[in-house]
Every structure is written in C-alpha cells, then in structure tokens.
Image (cartoon, rainbow, N blue to C red):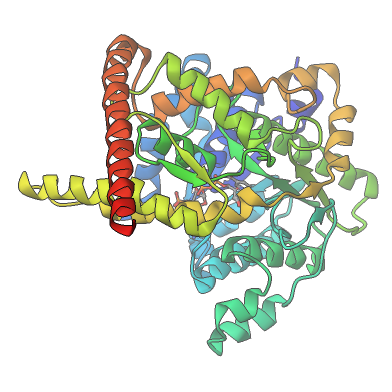
Length: 490
Ligand SMILES: NC(=O)c1ccc[n+]([C@@H]2O[C@H](COP(=O)([O-])OP(=O)(O)OC[C@H]3O[C@@H](n4cnc5c(N)ncnc54)[C@H](OP(=O)(O)O)[C@@H]3O)[C@@H](O)[C@H]2O)c1
C-alpha cells in the first residue's frame, strides 16, 4: 500500500531537469524506489563526445543506484532519455520529443542550473533564467501537467539579512537584464549587492516565475547548503567537492592549512536525501493545493528548506566533529598531517597562505620538475584559495531564515509519509551525520575504504612526528633570527 505522497505519482510521468547532477541523481533514485511512476523523463545535454543516452548509461552504473538495482532490477526500463539543453531556444528539443512531452508529462522537477559562483553573467542568465523561461513555456503547453517545482536556493536573496518564504524585489526584470547584456553593461553594475552571478540569476528567475502569466501549478523550493545523504540510499553519499565538502577534504589530506575563523557562525547544511524528500513532498503539496484552487491562479508558494531554525549547526562543531573522525581514520593518501590555523584578518590570512601554502607548494613543484613531471601544486593552491574566497561571504555572514511553509508541510504529512519521506530537521543528530559525512568523503571523494585504516594510522603517526619536527625547527629559526636582530640593535 502506497503512502499519500507516493500515491500522487502513481502511473505518472515525471520530467526531471538536472538529473545528471548531485541533487537530480538522488531525486531520480528516490522516485524510482519509493513511487510507482510510469516513466521518469530525464532532460540531458550532450557533453564532449558523449550523447545523452551514453551519459545516462554511465550514471546508472554508479554505486548510488546499487540499492535500486537490487530492489528493482528493471528500473532502467522506466527511464526515458531526452536530449536537450537549457541554453538553447526551445531547449534544443527535437519536434518529436517536444510533442511527446506536451502530451504526456504530469510533473516537472526543475533542478538544472549552473551553480558556479563565478560563472559569467551571460552564461548564468542563459541557463538559470532563460532556461527556466523556456521550460515554463513548454510546461504551459503540457496537457496533463499536475505540478511543477522550481529548485532555487535559500541564498537567492542573500543581500538581505532576513529571508522569509516570500518574493523580494530584484534590480532588473528579465527583459531589462537581456538588454543590459546586449549593451555590455559591466556585471557589478547589474548584480549590485549580490555577491555572485549564481545567486543573482536565481533571484531573477524566482521573480520571473512570480510574474509568469501562465496558470501553472507551481512552487519554489529553496534549499540551503546540501551535504551528503543521511541514510538513503546509503549514509554519507556525495560526489562533489562543493562548499564545506571541499574545505574538509582539503584539510583531511593535509593540503589546506589555513582558513578564515568562522567557528561560532552557523553553517546551514542539510542532508541531500532529506532535501529530496522535502522536494517530493513539495510536489505533493503543490498538486493538492492546485486541485483545491480549481485552476485559479495564485501566487506560487515558496518553501525554504534550512537547518538553522530547528537544529542550528556551527562551523566550529562541524569542523571539530570532523576532526574527531580524522583521529580514528585518517586518509592514507595524506600529503601532510591534517592541521589548520584560523585567521580573522585578511592580512594575516595572506601571510599564513604565503608560508603554509605557497612556500611548500613551490617546493613540491620544484620536486615535481626535478622528477620530470609537470608542476601543479601552486596552481592547485591558487584554485583552492579562490574557492575559499568565493565561499567567504557565505561563511562569515549569517541569515535569519523563516521556514514556516516547510514546517507546516511536514505537519500535514501522514505517519507513513513521514517514515517514507523523512525531512524534519527537528533535533537532528548532527554527530552521527558528521561521522557519515567524514566517511563519505573518505569513500566517495578520496576513494578509500576502511580496509586501509591501520596503514593510514601508521602513516599519520609518522606525518605527525614530521609535522612536530618542522614546528620545532620553525620556532628555533624564528627565535634565532629574533635573537640576532636584538643583538644587532643593542
Ligand atoms: N548543491 C547545493 O548545495 C545546492 C544548494 C541550494 C540549491 N541548489 C540547487 O539545486 C539544484 C541542483 O544543484 P546540484 O547541486 O545538483 O548541481 P549540479 O550537481 O551542478 O547539477 C546541475 C545539473 O544541471 C544540469 N545543467 C546545467 N546546465 C545545463 C544546461 N545548459 N542544459 C541542461 N542541463 C544543464 C547539469 O547537467 P550536466 O551534467 O550536463 O552538467 C546537472 O545535471 C540547482 O538548481 C541548484 O541551484 C543546490
């Protein structure tokens, strides 16, 4: 017997954009495993030498799909692949695919986006705004559309300090933005207080949905920072180095040694599987709401999905708990003992980066050149430091979020739905989550399993001794230099 939420999708045809991305893959897996959909239609672009079908075939071989492969071995038969690209007009669809979607699709989850903070405004607008515009146009022609959920971000209006589940004004309309891009207006003048093109284009897309004249059954879902899975389909699944994952991975392998001191600030991480459960529940709510409204066009509802309201987590605790796991199972491929020095002042940060990143990086590059290999360490440090700088805004600032709609949605679920689509973050167990997170990074990012822990601990002990020796040497040299300087002065 299916739960109310799952029942909504029975025999339905679900279109997912961004199904090759982090969130889209988990969403596809969960829908296939927990609901009896007729088809999941994935809109995928061709990339490099691979067409959409070849890309998708590779994705479903990933371990993320092991559980569904076991539970529903034929799951691939329910997937229909459609080649398309958000950047192209009419989404780059063939006439056949376009017509098929209009006739058949019932639900649309719009997850695709460029999430690069430093994307050019032109490309970010093309994908995040115009891509959404084209999809809305297609959806408005769909004959049997029951619901459309647009995935935005909790930080779309990050220049504000308080973010409710509301629409806020943006400096430009879509048409004005298009004209400004044609006139080559400099990006900072267009995005004004927004720290990057990603959040800016997401904000403009939200307002485009608000002012869209088509009477679509639509909602906006705004998640904060999506971390690894809590438990489904397996604990600790993740696949990219975005955000906090990249920082922790860098420290774990002894590569990143200094970072801004943000210990007491809140980091709004949310588990990926809970995020997908909330997203599916938002679709259920959207479909039901629209049925009650009988097609009357009302303002699309917004759902903020954040952890800070019910279970706030500080960066300090996140890093501390990660470190506790590091002592138990350090990675074997560490290049140095994992340590970090935090700074609060940019000038101090630059000095620390010079001594802890640039000098060792230059030394290692020299070694690589002497061994006949190409240098890469200084390049990697420059890339990592610019990533840390891009994240800075989101690490040092804090927002007051309201998530009333999301909490009400949770309360409206039946007991069975709550078990099947768990997403409440009330009294969330961060300790066990961070433990899974650490092991997820070790397994899926560093590709190490627990069989090497003994060897890794042994290596880590040696790295610690080497690290301590270097610290003593640095103190000794500094002391001697000071002593010589004093003697010179007096
Ligand atoms: N990750 C987070 O922490 C986070 C937080 C808040 C909100 N979100 C939102 O959640 C959604 C999914 O994020 P994610 O983390 O899964 O990102 P992701 O891993 O980078 O995935 C992005 C997806 O969008 C697709 N895409 C990008 N440009 C496209 C185009 N021109 N045509 C067709 N598909 C295109 C990508 O396809 P390719 O494989 O072809 O590149 C990929 O499937 C986004 O809307 C994002 O804004 C994410």
